[in-house]
Structures are given as structure tokens and as C-alpha cells.
Length: 268
Ligand SMILES: NC(=O)c1ccc[n+]([C@@H]2O[C@H](COP(=O)([O-])OP(=O)(O)OC[C@H]3O[C@@H](n4cnc5c(N)ncnc54)[C@H](OP(=O)(O)O)[C@@H]3O)[C@@H](O)[C@H]2O)c1
Picture (cartoon, rainbow, N blue to C red):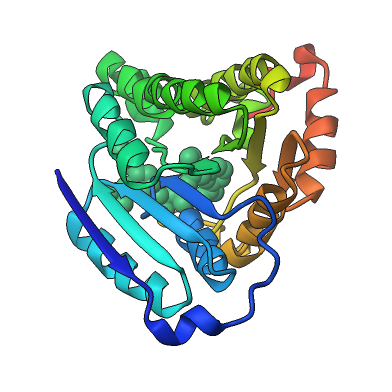
């Protein structure tokens, strides 16, 4: 594990802010994700302070330099494998010591294995559930306790439209994301009396490394558009559930209403 820190060049410190509101100090879990990269660029443009967590110390160092140049007031980094629950206490301890009074946590890491591999190997399936669901619940619980005690802040996590209905082609990934959405729903209710917001972000297919091997990837949503929806929700601390691009709310409402007797026959 490695910890590093940079400050933005002084020339940026005089730029006008663009109204970050209550959102000033953001912790990003999975800072090297394609979606997170674009979110971080947009937050840097708003002169936010960022604390980035991801596996690669090398990529974190590059990101610190890039985001500082783009206007971030401060960029801290912590290299760790977020899917390894035994690292979580140290991550949260670092955040509390070096980034006290953080107000926002965005969970962006995740893995999408080929469904066929999960069907062929219970180990692969369990790993998929561990990365996308178990470890996410574990680290969010630690951040939730901190924010609940301080009675402030916002937790946002990227799940997926794939979690809205179990499909033949990706139900292991989908069930992990669906379970995470359910966890967030309960967490939202628990934290409501403390004034802590919980936002569930459900993207449709997006053009990132996760999807670039897919045949129709060129038709997937652009990270810039998806990041804009995410940043808007973080700024407003609402809505509770964000579909991005927005049309996916209507698509998934329609998908959810297909009778099971028909749905189980659909080969997608
Ligand atoms: N792209 C889509 O179509 C889409 C749609 C809906 C939801 N999502 C969700 O959006 C989030 C961001 O995805 P993305 O599209 O930006 O994907 P991405 O570019 O492939 O990024 C995935 C991120 O997760 C980390 N990661 C992957 N496997 C991991 C593991 N086993 N342990 C720890 N970290 C791991 C990666 O770290 P490294 O950089 O170190 O590999 C990277 O930071 C994910 O939760 C994904 O499920 C994506």
C-alpha cells in the first residue's frame, strides 16, 4: 500500500468556483474506473478536493497530477485492493486522518466477468459476488458509521440496470448489483434520520474498459454524459435513484413489467 498527496498549482486557486454546494471533499472508491475518471475530471473542474482509492499506485500518481492540473484543490491517493475486506479499516482510517470532514463517498469499482465463466466455476461466481456486493457493503458500512455519527454527507454507489431483473446472459453480475441496490435502499432508510443521503446510480451500458469487448460497444453511452448525471446528483444530493442515461428508467420499467412466463424465454 502506498499513500501520496499533491496540492493544486497556485494558479488554479484563484479560479471562480462553479457552485459545488455541500459537496467539497469527495472520496472515490475505484478511482481508475472509466466512469470515475470522467466524474473526477468534472469534480476537478469544480475545484473539489478528492481522495482517490484504487489498486494501482502508479495510475493514482498519474491521476493526481492530471486532476491537479484540471483544477482540483487537493488530490490525495491511497493504493489498495477495495475488494479485499481486510484492507478496509486501514483505508477508512487514512481517510479520517488525512481527509477529515469529507462530505461525499462515491463507490465506483466493480467487475463484470463473462457469465459463462461464473456458470462453469463456483469460485469465479463467488468472486464476482465478493467484488461487486460483499466488499461494497463492507466498506460502505464503515463510511456510513462515520457520516451517521457526524450527521452529514452523502454516499453514492454505482450499481447497474442489470440489477433490476435477472437475465440469462448476466444474472451473476446482475444479482450482485441488484443486491447492492437493495442494500443501498435499506442504508438510505437507516441514514435518513441522521440527514445522510444515499444515492443509487444505475447506468445502462457505458463505453469503458468493462464493455469494450462487446460487439455493439460503440452504441453505448459516453462516459461524459453519464458522469454529468452523476455529478449533478452528487451536487443536489438527489434523487435517491439515478438512471443514466435517463431513458433507462423507462426502459427498465417496461422490462420489469414483462410477465415472467414470457421473460424466461427471452435469450438476452
Ligand atoms: N460500463 C458499463 O456499461 C457499466 C454499466 C452499469 C454499471 N457499471 C458499473 O460502473 C462501475 C464502474 O465501471 P466502469 O464501466 O467504469 O468499469 P472499468 O473502467 O472497467 O473500471 C472498473 C474499476 O473497478 C476496479 N476493479 C475491477 N475489478 C476489481 C477487483 N477484482 N478488485 C478491486 N477492484 C476492481 C478497476 O480497478 P483497476 O483499474 O485496478 O483494474 C477499476 O477501478 C462498476 O461498478 C460497474 O459495474 C458499468
